[in-house]
Image (tube, rainbow, N blue to C red; front, side, top):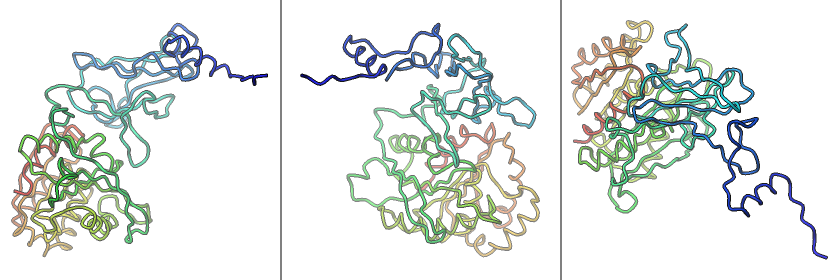
Length: 400
């Protein structure tokens, strides 16, 4: 007698689907639930639909939810982000048949890359149907790209040679723990035997070493600049800007980060990658918190870095006078040397940035010490839309 095989209901449904040659799709929205029905069933709706005019329709299946909305910190003029305090947070969605929630934005998204999530009954939820995500210090965001000519500089193009992004883990003797970084190597690095200049590029508070590629698209920006001959091929090291919490840790004046980068990460990169090990071929830049790291660990080490970029950050958060006085007292000799040795000091910020008040005291330091600098003041605020543009403007100036 042949053995009898029992198949569960879900597997039987899937087996019958395969046998009949029909796709295993969810039931229609008129059904009891918009959730996929059956084993391996696929949802039959788009969670993100980008329209020709740049408006976006978001959809989320949540039959039992009472309140669902889209949240994003990247485009406040389209999706409210609760800043200033007391203003609305997120874009409310409407519940439809089967528990499928949806909303279409009133305004278009400019061509660019955006992070977003859903908020379901107060809980942040990444898009369940997304395939692109961006890691934060804690948690993840969904990522969408709105195509268009204005965003072409940071987009993937099939006819452009592409570099590679590696995730590396290294041991930090300084911090006594395993650390992570993302490292971009330019097109051709895997085949040639050349040595390359290096840019150390740091993210902002709340983000991670993943951020400059997953949402910042630094790799695509460099690919496109290199292909057009506007930037030199370079290695880009993107460290994790946060360090293990400890009592007395300062988010911006974080010596733990500087010690780890200078004593552990940089030697790791020099021993594992083909780098040109001199200050003329080494740069450091960062946005927001990463800009603070650069002010404290890049400008003050002109023996290591001859190219510096600070995006959306300055000295003077809180008591400007005390910060500036302390910074100058601690780094007087290094600042005098920086005035002589730096080949580029690039400083960029948006007119609407909440840190705009830090510009005057920071430029005052540059002026006092005779540090020549390139100042780029843009529209907009503290956003990735600006930071991608700043990198696109900064990178072609490096290693000339």
